[in-house]
Image (tube, rainbow, N blue to C red; front, top):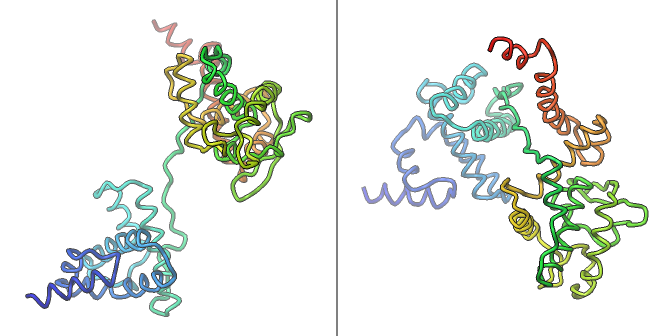
Length: 340
């Protein structure tokens, strides 16, 4: 008994994805142990390639679940086809109540494992080929109306000199987020040379290190101009960042921008949860509502795929539906009034 326990502990220590308890369970189940032998080989290969322990643990968890399913059906890895895979995935979703994202992660592990099995000539067919989960509908982004943004951006300057200085910087940041539709990471990454106040444009480095030029609104340009004298007093060590921490004299962090926006919203008496990405959503929705030019909005947002931008057409369509319901004689709202 002592030797068996010691063996399990050794197995768990040599396989960081395996707990001592799970090692003991597998050791006592010959069929499961045989199924998981190639999984351990694959994960050891990934471990040598410096995959993180977290990734290896997640991969093992997903493959262990499929191995348990196959053992129950008295099947092997090579006898698992699309039909068996679909049945297992349905069980994970419907019976085990796993979130779609978690099942997607398990499916990814299965796909990569079978790819390795084929390379090692342990299998000929990957049952995940062509198999796709239905994605859940993407939630519509929250949008604040123009009046609420006006309440935020046109609030009175604070009374104390310290808070007044900070508000000049914060207002410049928030005006720029809303004016040009920047991500908060793009905002804090801006250098002084990236902003052209005379030509009213901003050079932005976005995802994938891709650079784009976006227009700069006059309100944002004015706010930046009012902030710059303070920025030049705060800056330390010739930091080239546009937005500077007053205390540190160095580039502001994304966390600091998030916190400052919440402070400003509270001071303006806004109850809605305000966060930097909301200003980007508002930019996209308001631009699309005013122009209808989906391609132009895509370019300004830096979306590589227009389907990402198209979500804002759904936001605008919700408003369109409300107008339709109020105005059209055969709309739902009009019918309800007649019935009442």
